Image (cartoon, rainbow, N blue to C red; front, side, top):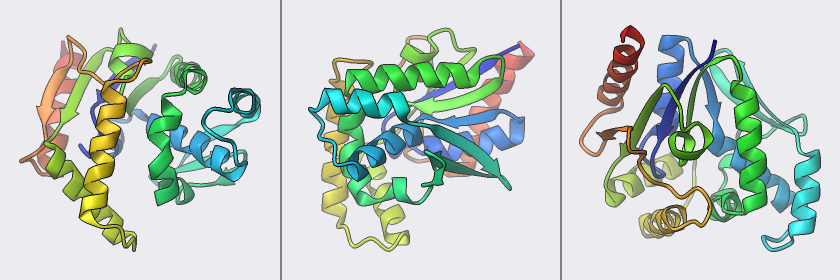
Amino acid sequence: MSFIVAIDGPAGTGKGTITKLVAEELGLINIDTGAMYRCVTLDMINKRISLDNIDEINELLSKIKIDIKNIDGNLRFLLNGIDVTIDIRTQKVNDLVSQVSHIPEVRINMVNLQRKMAEGKMVIMEGRDIGTNVFPNADVKIYLDATTEERAKRRYKQEQKNGSDITYEEVLKNVIFRDENDKNSNIAPLKQADDAVLVDTTELTIEQVRKKVISIIKEKIDG
């Protein structure tokens, strides 16, 4: 039996952190779709494939192998057998991942892989189109949101923690660019599903959001 929890929302709303915490507490399998697109982006960068070279992109997609492993409670991402958990979070990947995720061939390939990964499992999955495109019939749909400025602040703090010298202004610009890209995409644009529960995280702590999301899921399970 499968049970799907779809967590959607723009970058910087805490989707990744919340999904990880909820998965651990409820025993759900966490499939990080954003990291999957980051793996494709990193592979393209390493192989010097441009965004408009569809032939080479298709060849890459036909050979790429992405694995997600839970090691001591931490998700590790393997690209073609190599652990790239840290590499996929670098600025060069940040700058390109949104554009890569809008390439139709990439989107179709990743969606098929995500559906296959979730077959017959109790899964929680986060992204931008999980509840609208990947799993439109998901058992639970939640849309996390926050103001643009708050999301940029969170990303900036994360970058500082990772030792980056990027400025807040650069992070804000990147967040705005990605929002526009995601919401105006010709393929699976970012939007709240009609039957998704909206959770505004702007003024909430991670713990408050975690409790709220778990409450929504349990209410559905208890029926």
